[in-house]
Image (cartoon, rainbow, N blue to C red):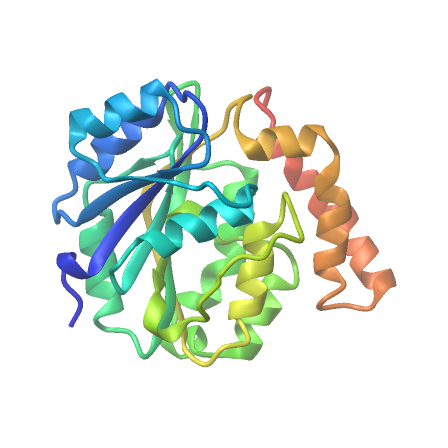
Length: 266
């Protein structure tokens, strides 16, 4: 039976984010309080000051740097069996952890648990748009417990794209490989991780409630990557893990339309 003491929020912080303090506050306002730590590869006075203000342990990555490396470093700093990698720009609903613990305690050998989410655009919550609708449809089979344990179902879902919101994920370390993320990609680091974990025996626990809000803004890594046109290449490579090349190319062209939902003008 998992309790709050079995869980850690690891905030991965970069540079001087104007949203970091709000993220910390959302974790400190959870109805069920757990451990909160912060990791960074870009230490600065803003991060030091916020850690002191909120009493957060700070871990500095002095090794290899990058999205995958920083996430793996933060993950390794937690000592609890459950870990959520919180992104510094995002907000978590007060009942995020309470609901996570309840669902994990009723799951069969859970690997990860994750929730539905809303977008934050200009500090306004967007509960529904085309991209969110598509992701919810893709994940709908995982509403059923039997399908959560099915490797076939999980891989069929992932074969059409990545509907799992990375900062909504809680990892169950005892049931997972030691290293979660690999440094091959910049955009699809999370999709690649889910593809690897989808092969493991256990459950992908999907909670169809909106338990966090993912911010879309010009400074976000996702927005910058799409602007650099890196995602198209990586999406195609990921799709080729599931499909013959010619089918993967057709799906990639359709999937690319979803990037428009990450643009601030939408």
